[in-house]
Amino acid sequence: MGQKPRPWIFPLPSPWVGPERSFFRMVGVTPPQAIFRELHSWHEDADPGIRHFSGIGRYEKAFSLSDAHLQKGQRLFLDLGAVSEIAGLWLNGHHLGTRWHAPFRYDITDYVRPGENYLIIEVANTLNNQLVGDGSRPEAERRTRSNISRLPHAWMSPFSEAPLLPSGLQGPVQLVPAGMVWMADQ
Image (cartoon, rainbow, N blue to C red; front, side, top):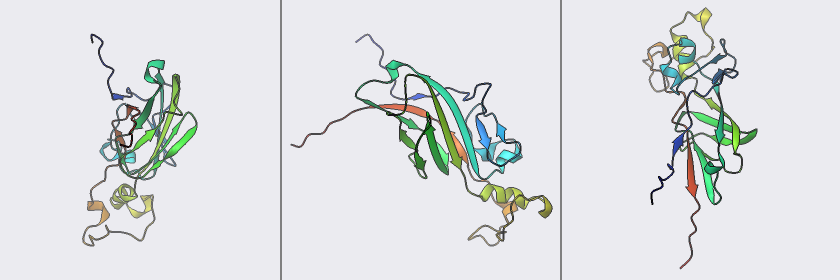
């Protein structure tokens, strides 16, 4: 009884980046990468290029697990926490799927290994934040060309007055072990 139980849920430590890799990459945007020390919504970032970004952001993380984390008869799940809007996950080169609604949880049991593991999460948001950012720019400086100048179902509000929407991976990202449960017919 004197042994402390292992926690059921444990977060992956921050920052998610080593000196050789960036944590967050924006596809097709300059600057193409930024280092996030903590997960947060893109719409809250100080950089307007990130705050108004719409597209795919790529998060990368190397993490290590000991044999004690990988117990026989136990499944290991990666829970991404809050995601806006769509997430794709790769672990050690294997694509584990794409999720477009909560829960953003993946069974990683068959793909995780003792020692170092390499995780890639790609998150896509909607076009809203780009249109909001473009709404406040002169037309020649806009990144998008659209015949949509106002929010759907809000014909009185131009995009320049619309709120930014939460975007990206907000977390918390956690590894969640789960024991196998067997149910018998009575």
